[in-house]
Image (cartoon, rainbow, N blue to C red):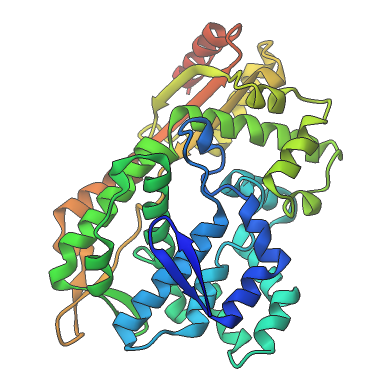
Length: 378
């Protein structure tokens, strides 16, 4: 047994098997994948990694399963530890590259790593079931206690991201929440007297999206990085299969050498694009196909490809819900049936969609007018 010192949980106890998995190169790579992508360029203290988040998720998974089942579910805890093993450089910021060129999400990539790498050998040589870990990793059965709406993954990233960014809006009553969670009929649930804690959790998550995850400057940086990466892969400068295995600093260095774009150099100098258009267009029916048409319109109007970026910012979680149970663990309904606050928040998330177009300052005014012309013509 060993301990890992953590900013939120202090000493986290690690078993011999968990230590062996953590020491594996596939897991050690997570030390060099930023939890919040480029968030440290907006929130300077946001230097947390997927490594600390993964260890924290394992710790919360142990707490939750011990409260619900009376003992720790070791396979589920390993799933919590490995749930982000497939992240590409800068976490979610590289997800579109993996999906576009490989047809895979970070969960797909993670599944392959667990099944086919040295991590598979480590788990298979133990007394625990690799098959069960993979089943949980896929979100089946108890796996929803990690990946679900109130899962250990979301609880940990709110706690760590709030601490690392210094944004107090991410503070949740974790202890009260975990003691009110249940698992009934193969589904995660929460006790009726924990409804207010569930409401608080979803409100907190929304505020963190508004103030941190969807911050306009961060969205601009992410869109600049993605445009550079997409151009480099499309041109054959870098192979997508190589790219998704890189650490953050490897990806930045490789892309900084790509002569087809100066976007990475601008990010490193923090010479960022400025907002040319930034409005909520959730009621307009504007989607990805319209975004592609807008890009074509801008470039046909003389806007150089590498002098602007565009992005649709949408908020996840609109379809989240969770079972409510009584003290006898009998289902009495869903949170959406009990909480006006939750329903209002869900509608807000569902209706909200922001169109961001950012550019070099020399094109800012022209692009703003072109975007408005395009939207008014639809």
